[in-house]
Image (cartoon, rainbow, N blue to C red; front, side):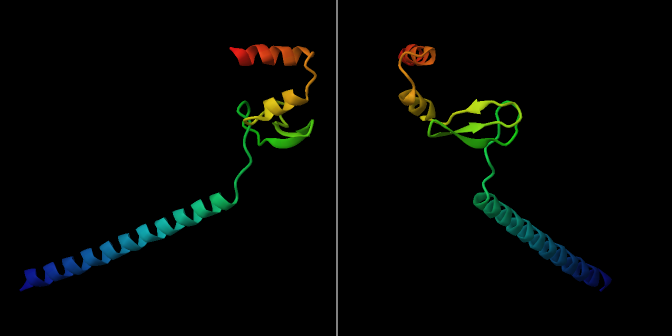
Length: 104
């Protein structure tokens, strides 16, 4: 008779801890979902590949480029260099250099 009560107590105890684990897992899932939705709505600015400082956008010749306030690096997104080159005088050293490099 004592074994039957011990088994019953053990079974109830296991059920209790199983429910607590499920509640904890569900709570963690909800926290992760909340964090990921917050991350989606508040996109952080891109960071400098050299020093990891957040980049700031600045306008140069009507093109928005990314500049690092710490190391003063300039970072261009896809197509921004081509737009800058379209505004550049074809006789400048940089225009000639870029034309040479883009052919190879």
